[in-house]
Image: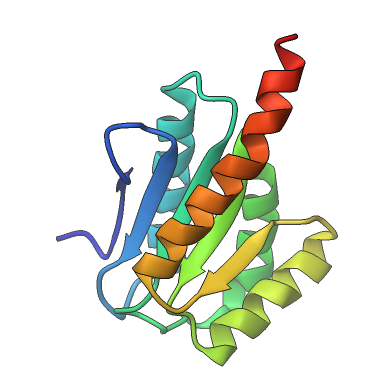
Length: 140
C-alpha cells in the first residue's frame, strides 16, 4: 500500500480523495501525491474539483529541512480548477503548518478543517449548493 493514495472520492469525479495511510511518508511521497492529484483534475472537465485530505492515520510530518522548497512547489502545482481543500482529522501541528504555508506563499490555499469524513461530506454538499446558483446564473 502506498503511504499516500490519491483517487476519486466517488463516480461523480468532482472530489479527489488524498489519504495518508501510514506515518513515515516523505516530502517526495507528498510531491508524488500532488502530481497524481493534478493528473486527476486534468482528466475531467468539471469546473471546480475539491480535495479531501484524510490525515486521520498520520498526523506525522517529515523532517522540515526541505519544507520551504515543498511549499513553493505546492503553490506552483495548484491546479487553476482546484477548489477547497478539506482536511479531515488534523492535529494542532498540522493546522499550524497549513496556516504557516498560507502566509509563506501569500495565497489562499482554501484549507478547511473538519474532524470526521461525515463532516467532510456535509461540507462538500454545502459547497456544492453555494456554487449552483452561480453556475445557473452564468448559463442565462
